Image (tube, rainbow, N blue to C red; front, top):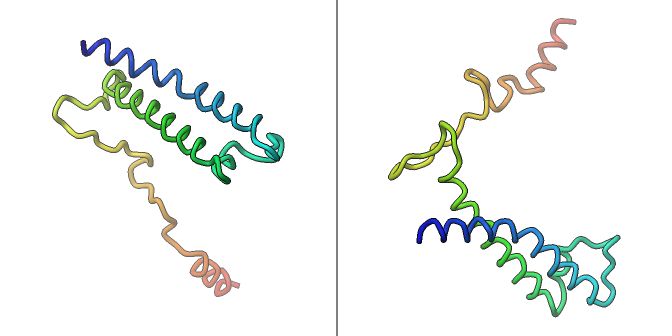
Length: 116
């Protein structure tokens, strides 16, 4: 039973992208005044039929989220969380590297002016 559910949720992830495009293009081609060369698909949210695009977003998000929820436990690697543990963030910067510069540009420019 669990294997069938996992397979089903992974399949929804495969379907999510084409579903979004097909529904969005169907709306774009039937909506008066909508031009695909000038308007993004997200502009379909505007107007009386915006609820259709909102539903498209919600369903696509649910499909993608269901797939992601099932894909993570199956992913191999050292960062795979064990049962009952919380996932930990992975370090993005090397040790000792700061996210923000230690000197502000104004302090650097003041020091440069003093050395002249």
